[in-house]
Image 1 (cartoon, one colour):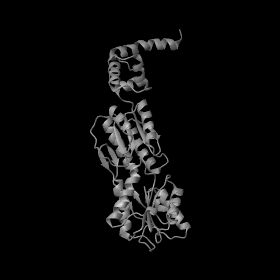
Image 2: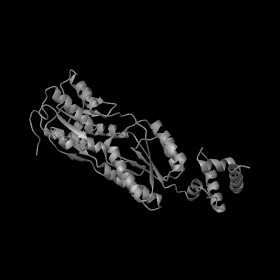
Image 3: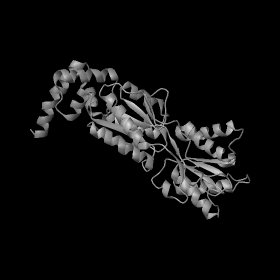
Image 4: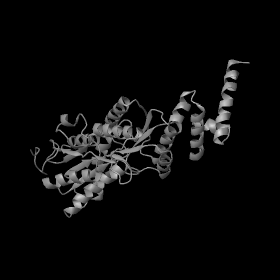
Length: 350
């Protein structure tokens, strides 16, 4: 008899004992330990109790299941190339590492079905906690997280229902628009990334419209551009689209990222426009290069590293059975630089 067959024979009675005590089939025991398929919560609980009682913790997967500890945390983000998410994840991972946890990372674009699939993959294989971005997710995913009692923290936005670390995107958009209005701008444009399944972009746009409405103004459709990329080329294309309209051009624009803002600045200067006399530009994120552009970029600083650290602290506390604050707000700051000023004037206000 081969060594492999002997090992299988040696393990089989133990699996049968667990199945007998739990009142389930041996295939159910296998599915619980291997994570190859979903198992009803009551049956999963019965298998774990039986395995613990019988001391069936011979391998790492069984030990993790019996203790309900995998020492791994999952994170699903929309865009792995976005500098903001990279900064947040770096701080998030460091916080987890200090507590002995490993980070398992996936990205899903801005597609909720892909997010559900990627998160489900992580849940199937065993994680102790989960970090997601935003407050819009498939109900089936949230239901599964609740059923499995996996601590969840949402980031980069605020939530009335779930644990979150982030900022008020609507208020941030309103702050940027209010500043431009105070400078004397009345034709303000907005360039956001995809708004479908993206509560952050939609909320920022709503904030801009709120600020305009409070002054009796509105965002003209020709000055409202949604792009499906977040880079420099998208910013150039967005401004080009605004200027091609028969409507009088905006004197200021608010962009969804600093890269988009940089692209708009390049396009404006290529057309002979002087910033900020002919066009004021506000970005979002405060990228490392923002202070070094010419002119330097006014932007909203959202503190991604602080968001990542706070998210890690929240999950570590909950995974350890300690209480944790449900909502942590890290306010976005408007950083004033040279790319904004009163319309028709060169230079930035002090």
